Image 1 (cartoon, rainbow, N blue to C red):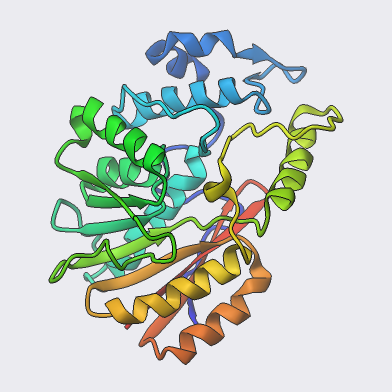
Image 2 (cartoon, rainbow, N blue to C red):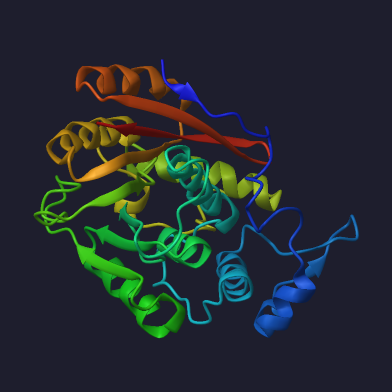
Length: 303
């Protein structure tokens, strides 16, 4: 069985900058347009309507400006607008994994090279990883629109230049082939796979989430965090996606120290473990992460 890394249950990672409630005073100071979406709820607490896609997007702009110095961030309409606190957790736990083989010290700087499979139009993982630890990133995507948008984010922000490269994956059946160059080495890969197995499944799940957030029953899904087809679902869902990634990672066993992926559904772990044992990895581990009542996990493996 994989090694488990202990963590504080139901809390963000200790190094995560997004602990506690959002400070809307500071966030609106750095991005005044956010004030258009802030209101005081029945509990006398400042908040936004998290079922409103425009409010969520503007909140993200403010968070990236305030905490990471990224002052120009935008995504095309309908593309995934990620919840930043949870995304930051993934990066910080990857830093812990690297520290385990570095005398407990988190390696920082451009010498650490990371590959983000499915970077999306938002480029959120490279932004956080580069700004928090100075790592260099290659972000890949099968969608030309996402690649163009991610490149624009990098180009418009001086803090990201020379730290992030975006590459188009021209074959949707591959994760690493056509991306990792001969003799190119990575310290780790990361991936947030499509959760759903079909468009209908994604729509039904998001309708339930929207109803919970808004407190109102709706019949039409409203994607508060957005997301197009390749970002939200794929044939076979996340399990098939991760199994395929594990099998392809064997070919690139000498090109990367750690391969990792998020796993949204706990029931998929046993099948993933069996596949990792089948391809004879030297070690693998599972790290649980929690944001409020939502619990997810990442699986990491190395040859």
